[in-house]
Length: 354
Image (cartoon, rainbow, N blue to C red; front, side, top):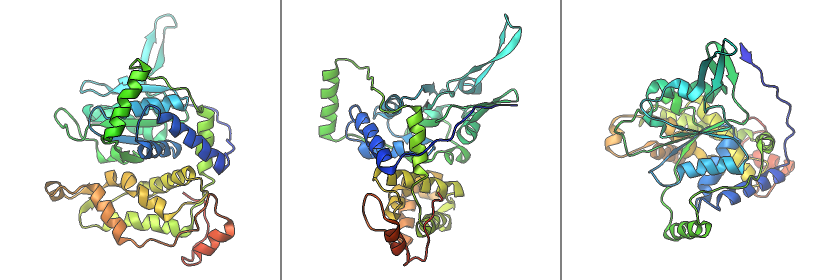
């Protein structure tokens, strides 16, 4: 059995309107997350592209703050799961409880039934509990006692993990890592930004941060639909496929990026184009997003760990090896004739596939 949730068709926004909304969202986020606009735009791109985000960084750098602030600014519900070794799958998905008044079992949803699910220190939970996320992340539903329950729309998992502390942790299996559309980090702030963080805290007079929403769930769905109007030329598609296939051919990996990887790369590129107020994807969009979209999907040879080589370095090398196709003329929106003229060199055609 499956609980059906009615959905109505959504008319997409114009690219210019969608870009304006996106920049208002990031501007509002920057009032609390100082000096990290590129990372904020990347996380927003993941949400708009319908993917999940893995924030991998040291403690205290604002990973949880980014997730909570994003949910507030976009008017979405947020559920927080603190992953610990004793966390059970039912603590994530929910479970059946017996109602004595009705003399029947009733499903009580878990924290995963929110628009934004913050999975704090996801690698501290055992594999059985981590696996509870698999169906939800891919199928956008949870099955309990043979009944499937649809998750809210939009739905995104923002998971965090500490990349340097391994005691008491359980590394995420490749099947689950591959379900994250991108992996990124925030890094330490600059000296000026760190001072500005303290100034803003003193002006607020409290540790609590409350942000007014810029959009709501309906506008988020409109922004997601807007991505479908961003065109992807055949030459750009071929370039994305070439990058992913180069990771598989690399002598430094045991397993390269999957087809899901190239799909995620193109989706993120469309989101980046929207943020740049363009209705078409450039090869530079793919180059800028290849590392966060693909590096975490690679299974490297064991000896590379000793040499300090990670997936990011392998993807960077692949980008150097794959020739970049010609680009379309710069501008807010590319005229059809200009795009077609730029594609003559590649013999490609305009396409909206992504």
